[in-house]
Picture 1: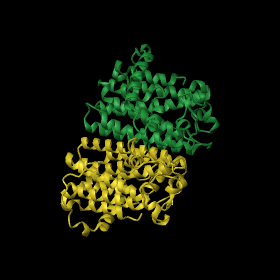
Picture 2 (picture 1 turned 120 degrees about the vertical axis):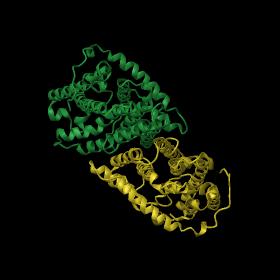
Picture 3 (picture 1 turned 30 degrees about the horizontal axis):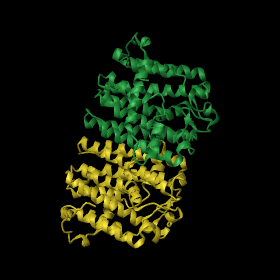
Length: 308
Length: 308
């Protein structure tokens, strides 16, 4: 939570119409990912990949990437392949996390999980296929950006998935199941990898594609780290307070799986306060950009107010 | 099997000391992949990744990449990160193929498979981690090569893994299990993806890094397609004729799993003849390069003469 260059928040933040903004962006992202993965031979694997990739969701990761590019004054088209890749990577991690050998989930976003529909073998391969294709798609389809920036983005994506990102976070998470002595520090270290790394990759890849200065990159990374942690705290709170219907997945699962969560360590009220502090800081990081920062700032606010 | 620019084979091919060549290259590859993946936190996942990555094997894929760079007159150092990445990708595919939900293998290269040692959850994640890291490593570590070539290599790697490569091949393979009416054409289409795509990526990535002309790329790709198919035919023959001890994995598994194989379709003798034709063609493709082609030509010969 580095607080540098803090300037007053734009008075327009409360008036910004985030709902319309997200609707327009989500529609654009849906169309882009639909086009990114046409069905070819062998059809079964493409269908399995598309089943999960096009299963809805908030599309928060691609939207963060595109909004970062616009904040920095560039055309979002330079980041469309990267935005699609971020959603492919996110989808891959959901498919693999849901497997019987991992979290063993039957439902995701209100629909049967990938392995419940296609079988475990195909679900594993669909995840592998999406992961590989995410890199291929960025390398093949990114236009109007110099190759050295594309190479940097591919390194950022790889790092966000690897043992210091999604994969490492899931390993630590599995390791903590059933343990009663998990500290807030360990929990943050898990979520920095499991949620934070990819969210940070969304803004930093957008920033790199836009040719951002180091100082911009630093501010945007801090923003992303803060919303990443807040996102996870809110996720943990919702697991306790929301219904399965609201979440589109099994509620109360953290408790039954004896998972370490923030509400368990801090209680629900303190968890809410800490999440709010993180969001306030995230918003403050971007005040320097004025009006252009409104979408990213409103997204930060939305993260804490969401109900699913 | 396109036969263009065929020139007489070098009389030195039979005198080329492939054994020493492979020993030196293998040692260099072992050291390079060992250095590529130091253990960090969380240690368990790095250990699992290293367990399979450093489990021996012929290191044929990285060697093919490095030999291609040398054939084209460049320094192999430009391709070391890519060579390591190719072995990471190959290892990932072995870890995931061995899982209970797929081929359910307990042994690989004479040692317990990854999931038998670390559990299914970690084995899935170790594969994911290796796949993601392969791209990160090429993007991060490749030096003395222009960024546009690195982007092309990353696209080649992604394509070799995806639904038109390893992943698609495994899907089609699983689909054919127990079917008695698999044609030679279907089988070749499976193996073009499952074995051929990555072998072709080894030489084409080496060629791209070396700044090869289209005509060189075409010749080298044809070489790789031929040795890829021959490799698989020989694999199928060995599954029938070799012992588990010789193979370091369960022999006779194709028959017990009712897999379609070349010996089943063509018989062992015809399979041998076809493999020899493919190898002869692969060798002929490279005659135009004279002495410089000896390593790749000798590797082609070795593929048909190997006993494990």
